[in-house]
Image (cartoon, rainbow, N blue to C red; front, side, top):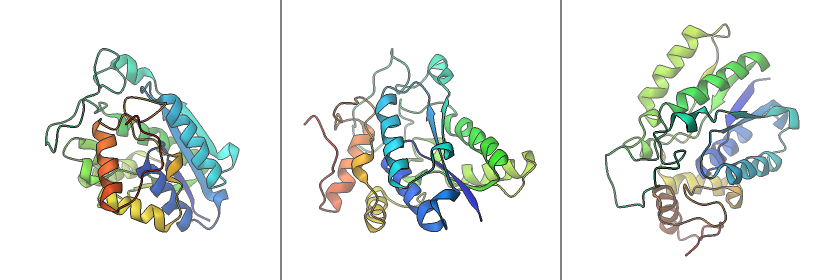
Amino acid sequence: MTKSIVLVSGGMDSLVTAAIAHSESKSSEHLYFLHMNYGQKTESKELWCFHKIADHYQVLSDHRKIVDISFLKEIGGSSLTDSKMQVSDFKGESTAIPTSYVPFRNTIIISLAVAWAEVVGAVRIYIGAVHEDSSGYPDCRPSYYKAMNKLIHEGTKATSIHVVTPVIHLSKDKIIQQGVDLHAPFEYTWSCYKAEDAACGVCDSCALRLRAFARLGMTDPIKYRS
């Protein structure tokens, strides 16, 4: 049976991607969940979400891997990891790369997922990249994943491994709707870049999330400061 690795950050895009992977899998035994601690400001909360989502989909304990890549914090250059940089508030639509961009993060994460896939014999790597974010994040563009799959084919012994991006062309509200259809537990997700106790509601990620729930006439189940 086909084994799959799912990159689960704890955000709602990765949750819905995990729900899709679960629905496409014959059994939870074929799913492997991978999470990265990279020194982000909401690291503890995201890790909690990872375990709650993994529990929900009954992923085996030895099929869960948490990798420390906190060297990204040492490199800096992102308001998510650098204590000297402030996470900016949402100021409307923009084509500028936001300060929350973590340099080359997705490439590093996918590389580790590919290495694990070769070890466990997984064929698919699911990632919740969204093209809606691509104006700000270069590593969320469809062209990036097309190039990445070519690289994986060239650079691995198991040339059948490929990255799957099931929500890449969906808007945030459509992602939520698909998650609702699949009974995904949004209460176990976290999108805020600033805080862990209650979401700030004003950073770029919170703004995208709140607007998406509002478009659907739904109430976001997580706690906000205001």
